[in-house]
Length: 146
Image 1 (tube, rainbow, N blue to C red):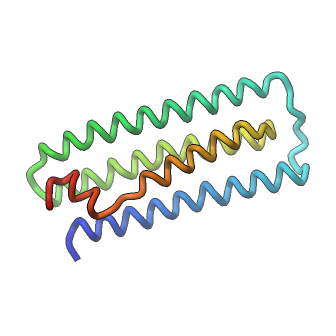
Image 2: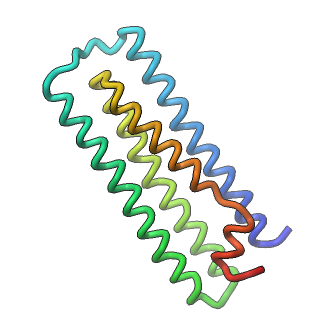
């Protein structure tokens, strides 16, 4: 197994674990909120949570995209394959963490407010996170190896 294939295998495992963590918390938040265990009533201040969730989600997507673009340029400048693998792994995990952190925080906002709009924003974050799953072809293109 080559360096790239083992890198992709590790990143897929990390991606799956982070995705499952977000999904499990989302389901738990939905169940807890539906059962009424969280006795919070929606108020006028809940819109602040929605706008915060929306701003954080869009900011995380933009920042993640810009960091990923910058990292791709940096990888092209690195000559050693091993250094490329290490740099790409850390950059990808950082990108995953940015998106996951915002999605988890938005889920907590949903638990506080029981506002379904916040949950919808979180679902869009999950869908965006799904598009970030690494593949061998994608990594080979980034590394310039065909």
